[in-house]
Length: 103
Figure 1 (cartoon, helix red, strand yellow):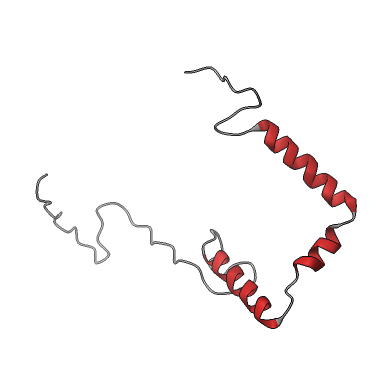
Figure 2 (tube, rainbow, N blue to C red):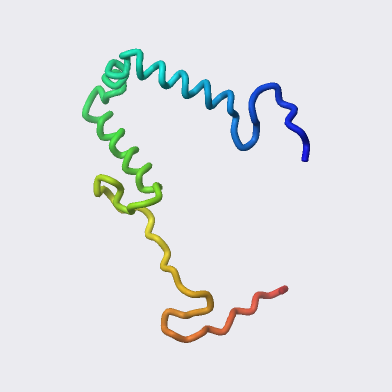
């Protein structure tokens, strides 16, 4: 395995310097008292913008793992596949495997 030759932090699975910087800057922002101001600035300015934001949130939640309806009981996400034992057919019979040409 090649030794780490980067000048800063661990690269690849994680960048320790960037993670530390992010944590410090996030903490500083939270303690600055500007959170409420930023939240008001990010709020929708009209009904159309609010609808667009809600639609985007629903779309994002539909791709999330976990509760298929999301935390707020909104639209269901992708259905989970049924788990079956390998080689078992739902009707209780074992199907003959398909022959694939060239194999």
